[in-house]
Image (cartoon, rainbow, N blue to C red; front, side, top):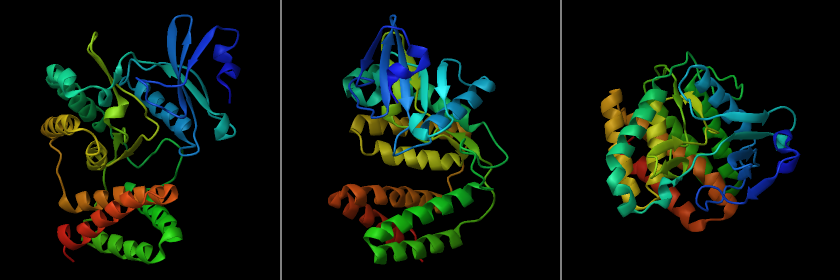
Length: 303
C-alpha cells in the first residue's frame, strides 16, 4: 500500500518522513506532513498483521466510553488483505521517553510518574466479562489465550531445539498446577507500555501513550511484568522511572501481587521471545533467555 494512494491524502501536497518520533525507525509507521498538519500513518506488518485492526478497535472502544480524548482517527481500512490495511491518526509533538537523557527528565519526574501511573490505573479500571483482544478471537478466559499462545511459542522453539521445547511443556504444566485457577476479571491492557511508546513534550508538558496495536483485556499483573522486562533493557534512569511509576500505580490500584502468577507471566515473556530470537539467530540472547527460564525452574519455583 502506498501512502499517496490513501484517499485522505489524494490530491494534497505531502511530505513523507521515513522516521517517526525523534529518528526511531518504525517499519510500518510514518510521519506525513500535509498542509502544515502532521499525521501518523500505520500499516499492518508481517510481524503483527492485525496491528491496524486491533489499534482501531481498541481506540474506538476507548473513545466510545470517553477515556481517550486526544487521539483522532482520520481514515482507516480494515477489510480485505491485512497488507492493504492502514490507519491515519493523530501525531503528537514531542519525543519518546527513551530519547531523553536523565538530566532532561529529572525536572519532570513527578509529573511523568503521576500521569503514567494514573493512566495505567484508569485503563485497568475498565473491565470486561471475558477476554477480548479486539480481533474477534473466541477465547473464553485469559488463561485459555495464554495457554494457546504458549503452546504455539513452544512448538516454534521445537523447530530449532526439540529437547528444550519438551522440557518447557513440563515446566509450564508444573507451574500451572500451583496456580489457583480462579477466573481473572479482565481489565483493559495497553500491553506495549514501554518508554518508546510514551511521548513527552517539554514545552507543553503533554504526555501521550501511543501504539495500541497489542491492546487486549486481561490481567493487569501481566502488563506490569511485561513492562518491567522491557524497561530493564533500557538505561538506568528509565528503570528507576519505571519503578516509581509501578510503585505509585500499585498504591492507586491496591493490586494483589500473586507470586505464582508472577512466575507464570515471567515464563510467558521469556518463551514468547525465544522463537523470534531463534529466527534472527541471536545466540547470545538465546542463551541468556534460556538461563533465565532455568533459573525460574530451579530457584524461584521449587518443585
